[in-house]
Length: 549
Image (cartoon, rainbow, N blue to C red; front, top):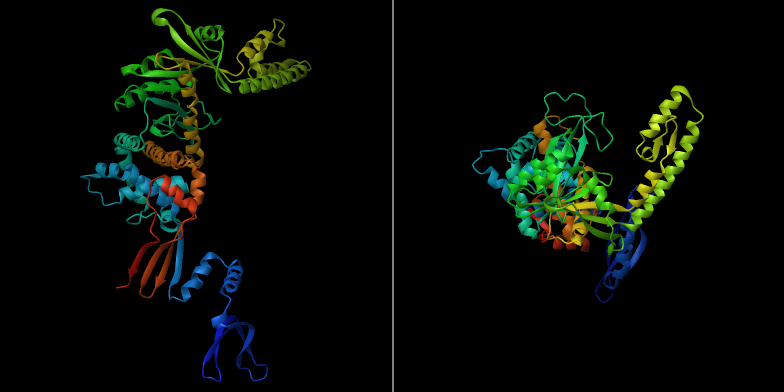
């Protein structure tokens, strides 16, 4: 019938009263059928109890009870009933950062004078928080915001609020991005003298692209040339904070983006900016565009590129060791106004890797040539041209007059000279060669941002087909990326680690006949440190205590 703790009192001869504590359970009399108490264990006199032993016993028993059941058990003695619990720490952190940066103020200014009945600001925050905490479709965000998380927003948000908010966000896209970035730059004392830019693309699992200016077929970085895609451009600071994002047609060449990007950011009056871009952006036209309005550039150059690049690589001189895996050499090519400055960087570890890869490819080529010698006719021609067109093996082959293929030893020797090297060019005369090489290496911050967009924030799949919705979706991801990168920069932890730690902070709801209480779980030391590093106030233990009228 269940065990329970009971107390019994006995009187001594002197009239004093002694209370005993017992563990008992009820049993039924086998013949008469009535219930009677049977003592399982006696803890002794109440005034002589070993409290430490009792605490150990309770702690041992609690291992077999869920935290929710424990709260329910504790509440029975007070008349409170445990109703629900929702993860709140991640959203609490994002909301604090949202206000600290001033994104809420930027949105409020854009909303000023607009008679929106929909909770635009809350809906935008809900979608951004969802990207960072549990990426899902806009349709699923409604249920997530209502049941699966505590967002601390003023009123419930619904699907129609999300779409209205996305339209508003797109309408004020440029001004919001600018205001948010400058608020962030001022708050974090960001340096905007060096801007890194790169592009990526994301594909859509659909075939019909009619009526879209963005969706187009192009060279996919995901090896999905069979599907339409969009191009996304991203500019970040040297600290890895995203400055601005662009959504461009999927068939637009990387180098074609530069003119638009440079013009757009010139309007922000960032000052004398040095642009760092990858090899795909290199062209004479882009170099001129990047120097517009006093700007400068650091560009990655193709090793097997124009003659001027080959001339730079063949220049003599000794490498200077900057770091263990970074040796540099500065060279100049050309005369007068056509004179250009290059920096050759060399990584010994990468050189060993390149050597190993080439050796493996040459061994594979020998095996392919041996197999090719056993074929004839159409089978021979098909295998031959496939080998010549192969990305890794074709570069080392040459075709003889007889039609046979042979390893080109001159090409192999030329490749050996390039092991572990990369070539940079710059228009800035004041930067040291060391700063040029180190600055370019920071370009990986853009690649890291793209990885965060695609994996942690689940940029795709994109559940939108209209251009405006696609642009709004990317901007929501940009806002989430901004928050995530600030968290990582100021805490020194990855976002997945921070998110996992803070999602253990819950908000519990307790009901009583006289009212209800919303109470946060106790903060751990790690959670307190994260809030402290981000300069966000710790939540009070009790969020709400309301009595029933």
